[in-house]
Every structure is written in structure tokens, then in C-alpha cells.
Length: 179
Image (cartoon, rainbow, N blue to C red; front, side, top):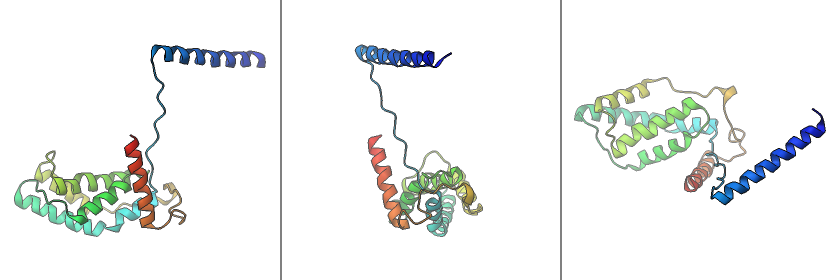
């Protein structure tokens, strides 16, 4: 094959694509835009967010597990400001690239804290208490330094912890509105 043949094939491909798109438009088919991707959070920031209130969260979850076992049912604690704050923080942190850290943040915010705030019929009280116990007594997670994703937060170019949190919260909120 020569360069002339390759150029002729490229021109034919381009023409065929244009003809196909024109025929699709006549038939009423629409071409959808590629979806935008969900904003990703720095692993460094997510780890800081995970550890920021971890001791308080563990104490609260331990008390909640005790309450579950005493009541012998899933108990709704209600919308306490601290619980909502922790849940919101961990919901942003779970958007990090590190899958293990992301899943830990997800479990704490969307399973344990959500069960305490809203109740959760998916779990029996004993199973939920057992899961909470395993999370509390598990070894604290650390992101492996060489494999972590950092979009500038670790170097200080993305602002302080709270500034970065506000930026990512706004990015995720606008992404959710679009989708």
C-alpha cells in the first residue's frame, strides 16, 4: 500500500462517516455528547478527611452498636449536626481514586452513619452491629505513598483542607445537577 492509497482510504472513511451521520439525522437519530466524568478527589485529602474525625466517629459507632444490641432492632438516632457533618465530609472523600479508602469512606457514610440517621431496613440489628464492630476494630487504613493520586492538594497548590473541601463539594454538586 502506498501513501496515496492510505490517503484515499482515509478520505473514503471520512465521507462514509459524514454520509452515515447525515442519514442518521434524517431518520431522527440523535448523537449524544460524551458524558463528563465525576470529579475525583485527592487521595491525600481523602485520607486527611478520613482521619480528621475518625476517633469520634468510632466512639459514636461503638455507642450506636451497643444501642442496637440493647434495643434488638435498628434504631434511628436522627439528624444530629455532627453525624450529618461527618457524613457530608466522607461522601466527598469517597470520590478519591484509592479504592480501599473510597470503600471505607462509603461504608462509614452510606451504611453506618446513614443507618443511624435514617434507619436501614436492609440489615438486621445484629448484622449491622457486627459490621460496625469489624470497622471499629480494623487496622486504620493508609494510602500507599507511591501510588496515591494527588491533584495538587499535597503540594499546597489547592488551598487548605477546608478550601479544598468547598471546591470539591461545589464540583460534585454541579456534576450531580448536570447528570
